[in-house]
Length: 129
Image (cartoon, rainbow, N blue to C red):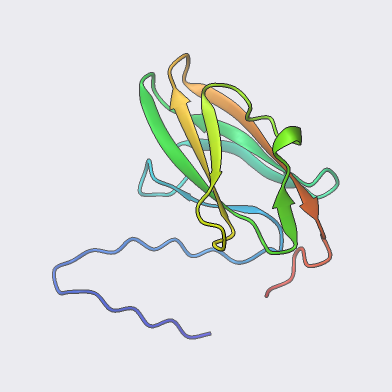
C-alpha cells in the first residue's frame, strides 16, 4: 500500500492510521490529539453480540464527538444500542461514508458508558481488506 500526502510548508497535519478489522471500530475523537487515548476507556468489540462499547470521559460542560467506522457488511441498530439518553446523540456522518458520529454531552457527570449494537456479517473480522 502506498500513501501520498501533501501539505503546505509550515502547516501541520494530524493523521490517525488504523488497520481495518472488518468489524465496527473507533476511528478518533475531536477532543484530544491522541484521538481517544485520554477520553476513552474500556473500548471493546464483542463479536458474539456485535456490540462496540466503552466509557467516554469529560468534564462537566464539555462536549466532544467520537467517530466510529462501520464496514459495509454492518448496520447500526439504534433500538438495541445503549445511547438513548440526553447526554448522547448518534448520527451518520454522511449516507455513504460508513461513519457514525457519537456526540457526548457531559452535563450531569464526567463518565458516560456507551454501547453501539450492530447487525451484520462477522466473516471478515480479523482480515485485512
